[in-house]
Length: 233
Length: 233
DNA sequence: GTCTATAACATGATAGAC
DNA sequence: GTCTATCATGTTATAGAC
Image (tube, rainbow over all chains, first blue to last red; front, side, top):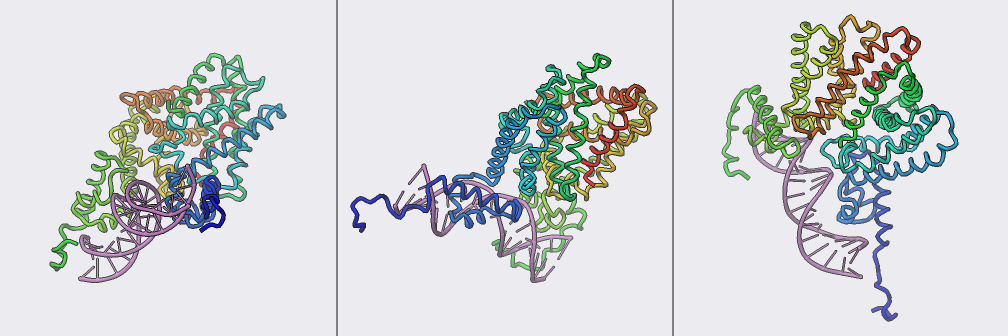
């Protein structure tokens, strides 16, 4: 009997919903990092977050939902960083480097998690796949981030969309390389970024040169089909 | 519990090992085609092949092992077809088309299976991944097949290795496109092949042109890194 | 709407007997 | 080589407390 009349509904659950939800998420991410995605069970997560298995599933309807949440958060961070730092960078190559390296920096600490992410992103049967119609908005946001690096006088406007898609595709290649990169300090991934940073301005110059004008249309068209291929629309 | 289980003396071996093994494999492939990879369970396979679950696992230690077996068989077929037909094709573009389209023709009937294959091929944690050290011989064989299409006077010998790797990478892109291709008669996949067939000779011409000689070394170097990226060695 | 507790299910995978 | 348990885990379901 509560002596105080009508005291609030007592005993209450340990936390309100948001706290539980974010605790579950934090525990999951930590366990994925510590033990790897596969070796972490939903039962582990629930136990360590001190919630029931049912509640964990209530907030994250599948193990992959954790990965998806992580992915979205990182891309938002990437957009913020790029939006903040890009205006201070004049040279095209540096802009491309910034956009690639900042993304890499955001992910570098979570390689194990990225492995799980890759699996989801490349699974054609998953609605969370990088090429699935359901993830189109995310893909568009990503391409827009890369396009902002190409907002530069050296890049003809007519080429920007096509090149942005190409740059996004190159960045997917970097992520793939990273996932396999066993070299110290991710040296090989850094090399892949270097290669892109060096190649892109050359490509832009080639495409802009009057000498190659006859080829330009064809190449742009081919990059457009690359966009269609990867955009899977 | 099956009532006749205790009936004793081990029912003798119904067949010799090979017959059971190939029966299991055949049943698995048929079920994958009929119901899709995910909806086919090992228990289905075992039941339809009239063997125990344990025996199915004895021969195919995981579901993915079926996919691996399929992949190896198809690549051998591809090597055979290309080896047989390529000598009669003089034009470079036609050679490239042959090698791409023959591969596609081999896979076209098994798109559902290819989806499962893609998942294995792109899973960084799988030793069966397309980029894993364990599958290096397979990858080398694949690159060699594509290299044979580039055995042609138009292609400078110094470029052939790099371009073979690039062509192989492009072919991986075609497979990825195919997996997502919902268009009638796989039209979009055909277009991707067309784009590659048109682009490659142009690229070769560009790389060979004396005007671009200063760029050539850099581009070859970048293609080499692409090879390293994808070869993951 | 937040949370617990517990059971149950389907299925991929393994162990060990014969 | 072959089988019969048995396990581990993702996932669903139920019944209820506050």
